[in-house]
Length: 354
Image (cartoon, rainbow, N blue to C red; front, side, top):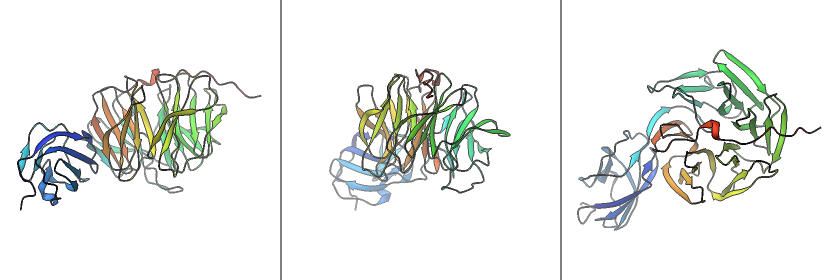
């Protein structure tokens, strides 16, 4: 028996961006409140699982293998037209990011195969070409964690295994840039060429352009990683997820000595990125409630995308949002360009302790 009493009508879908494996809620009418089987809702021809059904809403989980960015939706055989929903395109599988993917000027996307602590993986860093090809880029870095492009256009990679940040000018030219950085996780460059490094045991370091390592400040340790991001206001933004249900996003501005709370509570916040309008996007990795949170300059937070456990986010100049899951890389067409790296910091050379 059909579980619908009348022809369904959709008012809106929340959120309107979904990564394969994520959940969405369909709001409308024509639902009778009984949960149907998985064949009664199809997205792009693929059956989706109904988690909960009421007379005015259906909460649905998309399968991991779903394909296609242009969405076709049917409910109990009824085709729904003009669906305001975008499904992320899967760009790569069998990877293991633990922080943001990074982008170069040619449209290449870089991500890691990080592995568990002490695990030697056959590939350290993959590159996803603009044509969709995913290939090995770098080997022999143990537990690659965070990446950033420097002012010299080289790729820098942190290793939480040995507390080292490596400089990669080419796959055949890899050298140690800085060491003794604790459990080195998140990294980001400012516009003066200083490299900021998060040691997840509690310290944020500055490696100056002259390669001096200076402890900047301490924050509570993380069970996962420190994720760092520089904003258009010249501040450094930090997430340090722990075992709490909610974790704060921290911010420290130019000239300040200690960070303060920027946003008080997100479930397992991970990697971050800004768009040109000053909105901050945060990947949250709470199992069963993972996605991307957008926080406006006025502090209003909205979940704009859902997905499986997400750990990183980057936004290119064409307005594509690149998302890192724990084993895959995805693309959503956000429509708002990312913040150019050259504008992301006003930090000056730190004072040297004598």
